[in-house]
Amino acid sequence: MDPGQPGGPTVLRIVIGTQLRRWREANGISREAAGDVIRASHAKISRLELGRVGFKVRDIVDLLDLYGINDESERAEFLQLVEQANARGWWHQHAPVLPAWFEMYLGLEQSARVIRTYQVQFVPGLLQTEDYARNVILVGHQAESADEIDRRVNLRMTRQKMLHEPGAPQLWAVIDEAALSRPFGAPHVMKAQLEHLLEMSELPNVTVQVLPFRLGSHAAAGGPFTILRFAEPDLPDIVYLEQLNSAVYLDKRNEVEDYLAVMERVSVQAETPARSTAILKRLCAGD
Image 1 (tube, one colour):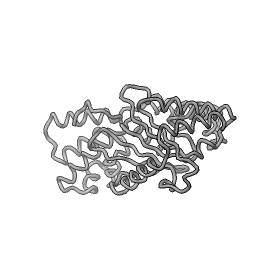
Image 2 (cartoon, one colour; image 1 turned 60 degrees about the vertical axis):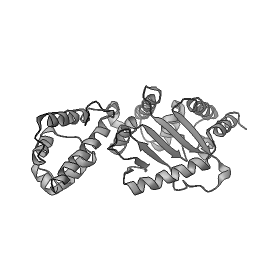
Image 3 (tube, helix red, strand yellow; image 1 turned 120 degrees about the horizontal axis):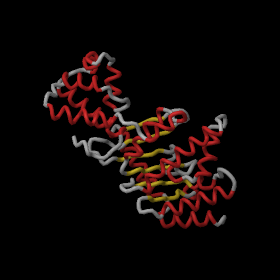
């Protein structure tokens, strides 16, 4: 492993967990036996190997001993990665309004090389204006204080900065025309949001396609989803499915391939980027 490899703490945790699983399986050691060594359950080993939790250096040292990783340079390199993986992401400052299930997504999103998303109800969060985002957030968090709403809006705006940074990911968004016609806020808020979509679609790393009403049924009728792809060869594509109070992460090859096939079909069914721009301009004009 290269300590200088790209990827944030979340991705590093997954890479480290994958390597721990490989070493464990190569030695024919069960999760239960590995758990006994670090004074934990087999479920804790499973979470470590999936990159779902942080690492205690003492636990990793004990596992390296168990798996027979005795080369000092290899151990030092691996423990350096562990230290990097335990670093706190910028989003931790928003912890009071950040559910654990979404925290993992933020880490993956910040490390992705390609983000492909289909959205039916909202403009994707990475492409929302501040006023539009505020109105969307208010719908789902009506009981929260003004300060909490401000924190959520700030978090969403901060997420978007990566699209303008060197090495920015490729964002490919297919947006149902329903999301562009459903008002969140006053007419001027929606007009500004549509204009912002036009501006963002001009970026070399952003592609926007509109899935028109006239299409009727389509391949993505099951609902919104996002597919994340990473530069690290050890990481599979991950499908993110957000629910009301939780999220599902899919990384099994057959499951991911199903969603990749749907995304390919819906991208073909949607208007081309050029025709999508024309639709956005028409909606901006109120036609």
